Image (cartoon, rainbow, N blue to C red; front, side, top):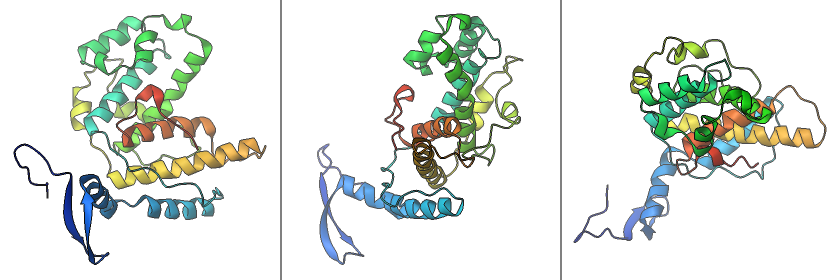
Length: 251
């Protein structure tokens, strides 16, 4: 229940009876939000569950890795817009001109959703991009795959398997210049619990992947490039305060 307002002011603290504590406790509004969140999603339980599950797969991660921070999820529409933006930008890799990409984004009112780096890229022809920029664009298909997983289009978001051919069928047909509106309007997200559980698993698998590389241990259980791009999408969906170009992927 929302706190009562008085003369336009919202109380900073309210007194509630917290059953498990069996005592009156002065809680801030932030405390109450946290309690409501933990009643639905418990990052510590998710951490323990994923650590155990990953171990059975041979992905051994230490207990001391922290649980995830409390997320602030993006809306389904925001996720759908980012998905289309990435997908149409990816068309540059397949030979689309900057004119086509820009025109499609303008026609679908998506130009404002470009990041600064993406806007800069459209000011330069693809054949003049740096090699690493082209490589990064190519791998963004993995980010799109993760976003479509969040939208429930498929159930195959692993740590090591490549994107399936079915991806194009989920998205607007850029070859036919199909408007994005139907995709944007019909896009819905999986449950918040499913998404944060998947992000937690990718965070721990990312640690395992880096640890294996640092110790020169070869493994086919994880693929670093795949994990980085898919985790980036999951982080972005779960933490609305993060900008796409500045997602933190620490382990």
